[in-house]
Image (cartoon, rainbow over all chains, first blue to last red; front, side, top):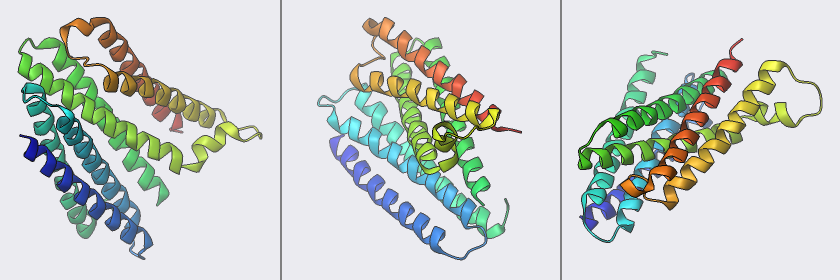
Length: 98
Length: 136
């Protein structure tokens, strides 16, 4: 179970970095909808930060019990929520629905 | 463009804090130990995410802090909005501080859990008031 929390920490850090780089790229571009694009990407990056914090808390717990399992489940579900919002952002912006 | 950005982030903060309020209700109405802990951890995570977004929102938007600290007279909605959002930040800081120190989901932490709950609800009410006062 500790390997799962470690891999959740790594993946959420990488996805946070990716979404922050995308925010920077969208803010410096000349795209028409860069405001809404960067706002939604910022929200998804905060979701990845939440996933990271939860995975970090689960890695701090020594014994394997229900609490640790709950932390890992929450981390995974928040991570998937962040991915879904990130993908939906690109769909919404490319379809130009505001 | 700035309006779209702040409106989206404000709605996301409201969504996160509302999820936390719903997990409070679910936590207090179930007796199953495993689902109680799952609800509590879910509420903690959403509270932290909302708090982070609220912090970025306050630090990045210049007009909210400006309305309080500038010496020229400001309009009533600006003052109400910025002061109530600052008060809600203070309440949520205590809320998050408590959840990092104690294991609040255990049965022997009832009084601390009650303080934690009251702080969260007060922060939510002040944040809602801040959002409503901004509408013209």
